[in-house]
Structures are given as structure tokens and as C-alpha cells.
Length: 113
Image 1 (tube, helix red, strand yellow):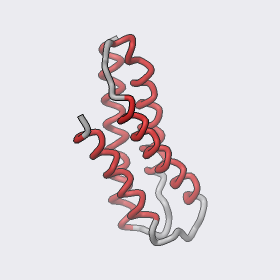
Image 2 (cartoon, rainbow, N blue to C red; image 1 turned 90 degrees about the horizontal axis):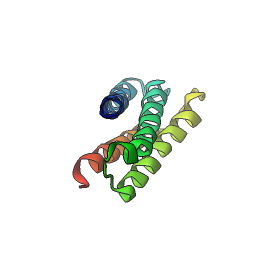
Image 3 (cartoon, rainbow, N blue to C red; image 1 turned 180 degrees about the horizontal axis):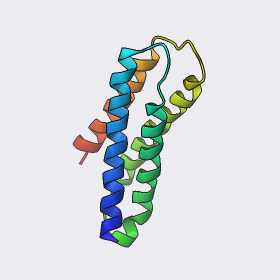
């Protein structure tokens, strides 16, 4: 079971890396939302929920308030990405907002102990 937890943490970190990569690509082409937002946020969401569900089986202790806030942030990123992916012209506030939410989520993960 420990291997499964490590695998989920690995995939969760890859999702975070995909979101940071999507942020860097977004500043290169701010007109349209790239698909990296969808893939990274989806991977973060699925692996985060799986890690929370496996916590009783692995003996891991998590701060539920922290995880709830991180869940809200990643859902906000996913909703914004889904909403604006199909549109050709996006508002100017979208890339900085998505980037700020990603940085907020990383900061919550690292600094909230």
C-alpha cells in the first residue's frame, strides 16, 4: 500500500509540474488557454482525492482544513480552464489569475504545516 501512496504522490507532483508548465506556456501565448491547465488540474484533483481516500489505509495523517482549501483552489483552476478553453478570445485577467491560483496552491502545500 505504501508503493501506491508513493505513486500517487509522484503523479500529484507531476500534475503540479504540468500546471507550472502551463503557466509558462500561457504567458507565451495569452490569447488562448492551453490544454495543460486541464491535464495538470485534472491530475492534481484525481490524485489528491485518491491520496485523501487512502489515508486511513496507509496511516497517513493529513490536515483536512488545508486539503479542503487546496481542493477548492484546484477546482477553481479546473473550472476556469474548462470555461475558457473553448473560447478564442480570453480576458486579460485569466493568465495571472490561473498563475496566482497555482502559486497559492503550491504555497499552501509547502508552507502550511
